Length: 200
Image 1: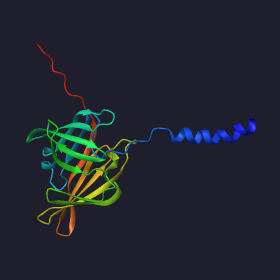
Image 2: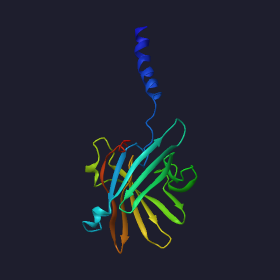
Image 3: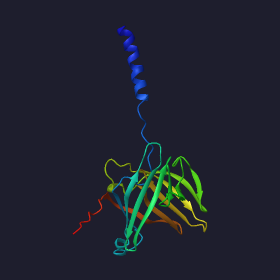
Image 4: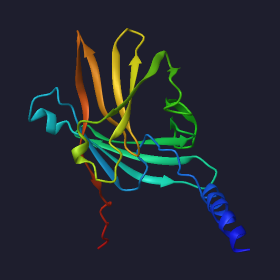
């Protein structure tokens, strides 16, 4: 009997491990409530670069089992404020209206396994994975390996964007002549709460 148990124990262990829940696929967009990201255009001189900084904050994030995640992003800059809504499902990220109507597909379902796609006349292709050079601002638990995507616009202009898991876009480059110039880059990351309004 003891011999039989010794033979069955490894098989039982393998079966138990196979039944464990699988790790969810990474989402290449911000989704954690309170996550606040700040972006600058490094091609601009200071102090213009700092004054034109864009802040993106995850205001709301909802996820129910078996459904898509709906995320509200609040954007703020010196030009004003704006809210965007994203739907994250099956690796894809769609821009939606407040009532849930689809406005455009930012990343296709199955991303990054989906190598090419088009949206509103723009042709996209996955270039490949790469470690982000600005990863020093990320927490130690964050994945610094992202996916570069190249976009070819109808007028022939080309743009590359690096997407990181749980952060989305962290760097954007434009082809100017023969050089790729960074025009948008994540420069700070943290969590912020909305201020509490006090009534008199």
